[in-house]
Image (cartoon, rainbow, N blue to C red):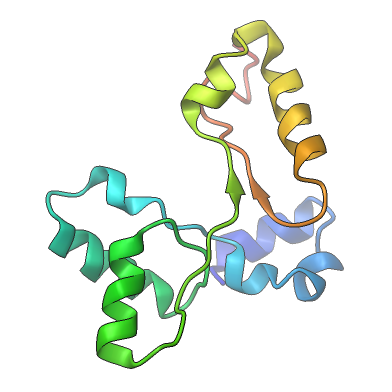
Length: 123
């Protein structure tokens, strides 16, 4: 787990849940396939991510880790919002969009996009 992720988990009252929910292995989720130049670079970056984390939507990285490291299953996806699933609610209903995700997926880990708008400034 990254130092920054651990600090924020503690600061937001999630410290007790870290072990229970394996947050040390799912604190940073890889969605990197979206922003790379090729399947090969997604595989390399995704596999590198999986050295320290288990959360990934980068299938190419999971495939590289399986092929080159012999992992049965190197990464796992979790329920996750995308920018479009948050912004479709509109700027004034962003909180309701968050609430919906947290209600629908209340029995495990969930990633909610929180940078569609200005999360600190409210606009």
